Image 1 (cartoon, rainbow, N blue to C red):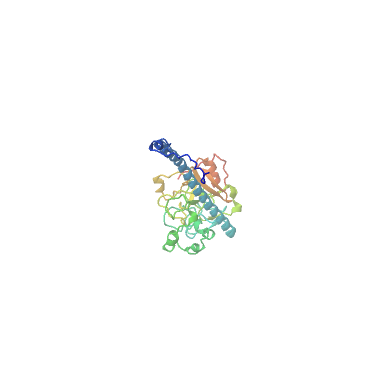
Image 2 (spheres, rainbow, N blue to C red):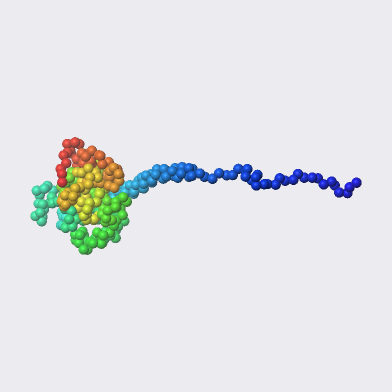
Length: 318
């Protein structure tokens, strides 16, 4: 009997050969056509996303612009609570301020023998302190307000630093004009007219309006609106067409060169936003007004005491 068990024969492992390797399936690479298709799809997606991103950025800027108008509206409400009236749109030298409805007539003289219905012109000559300066304490600019030399013209050397200061709340994020220009304007008149003491808006020359005495109601009357800056504007603290506008022009109308050469020309509302401009009414409600708004309706929204029926008010021209 054998002391050792019989050796079992195991099946031998097959050895690979060059011929068998060639028969194994290989992973196929990405073809040029597939790469082109993927790149083409990415280009289409990118082209579709760019307008979307641009629109989102514009919506953000427009929202920030509306927030600025809300802050200005709250500032005017706080001012009127403290002073019992809205600030004057602008002021002349040695002005005699009057409460509406005691507005002057064009033929009534004042103490310095000049007509009280004088027109403010857009030139750096005059007193021209405006509503924006009056609102400074209510937009967290108390220090700047205390630095204003109220005894001198806004164009004097003593007020140079004031003029050169940029106030963020007066600037729309979409406004690419000079940083010291204002993006918002008070409405002084319902038709195209120079800035006078007899204007029918809420912000005019040498006049104060008590909110509770506005016949049409503050909720129906436009207080501020967006504006496009014209060449040669005098800055946010100048009570000229730099911070006052009227409803005598279609929104977003670009004035002609000869109009801008006329210092009595004021102009209308406008914005960098597509299709119209944002406004704020006297009660603080912000609304975006289309540039296709019916003009008689627009003028009626600016007139604080609109006694004319819509469609019968003929606008004058500047």
